[in-house]
Image (cartoon, rainbow over all chains, first blue to last red; front, side, top):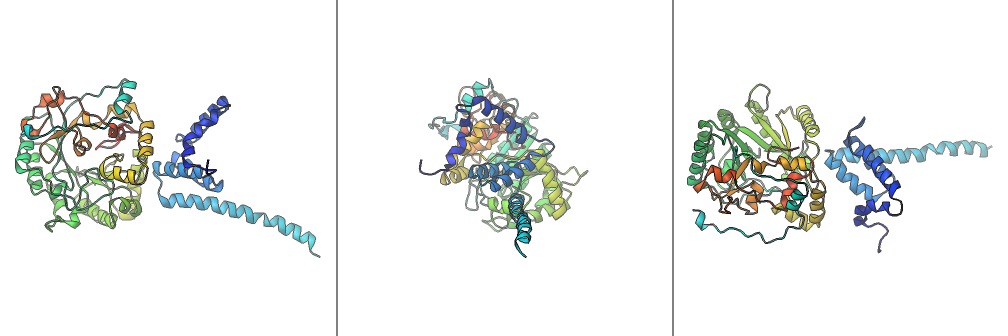
Length: 111
Length: 340
């Protein structure tokens, strides 16, 4: 293998059942139940959430899969890009909100 | 006439096994009726869309002859079972006999559908410069059903697929159709739009997308229409070339195969229409026409409009190929949208 991530490996997702079939079967059923149909959220909304998470988690397989999934759910590039910004501001916000911890500690350290 | 045609031998072995897929699912797809005569009158078009299965464009010169038009009208007159005429192209309005064809089919009491690309109203004929601005009124006078491609309710996808500036012109053309009453509730003048993906992926669910189109087009442009038809891109001709060039053909075929839906297969359009080419040959659909997979009768004799026999057409074995996976994937695909 020349790279850690190979785009062709996405097709092998089902192979996670090797050596742990029941757990994989349970996972895929859960996965399908959650994202495979409309529920309280539409498939389109779920796909946009998944796209945002894909970016936050920096998973190239998921980014490819959910870019396609968003298109197949009728999303447009503005909606998809906005979902990525949601992920981005969450990450930025999480980083920045930790500065409160820094401020707290700073107060203890400064006379 | 039929003697001069040479039957194309399809040598390429089926790699994705559409017919095997039918057999595995116990599906038999004989024709159910011939209620629609779909006629591709010309490959000339003012646009060069990137996905076009016809390879249509401003340089194309293929036209159905006046004799061919007359023969189609004769077939329509002789067969009350064929209640609908579906005129396509290219941009069918660029055929010099288009107007008369519509008027005479309407006079026969047929329901006439025109696959109208919207922009031809503003662009006119790319070869002669003839204006086509009269079309909305002409359609309304003949109460023709207008079916128009609009790949998305936004400019980005639409222009990516159909060319720069197409979205803006399409909005203007729709305004002109709305002004004549097309798409307006209670007018009886039908304006249906066609969505197809802008790349190698499947269409979104038709009902949800139709609601999006209606909301967005009304709010942003004050436009109305009747129904949205979702159509899957067929892996042939110009779109196939794109798939090959970008190395996505195999993945797209696998996607179509994985999404095979027996319910969608039962509703394929070739079971209720025949497609006529510009030279009078008959095909099971417009896609088979572009692949030159001629329709044949039970004795494997080719079908043409020049020796048309309703019984032979109804009893024909439909010719299938791997491209048919495009019509049976997901919610299905036809000239009238989803089939399942």
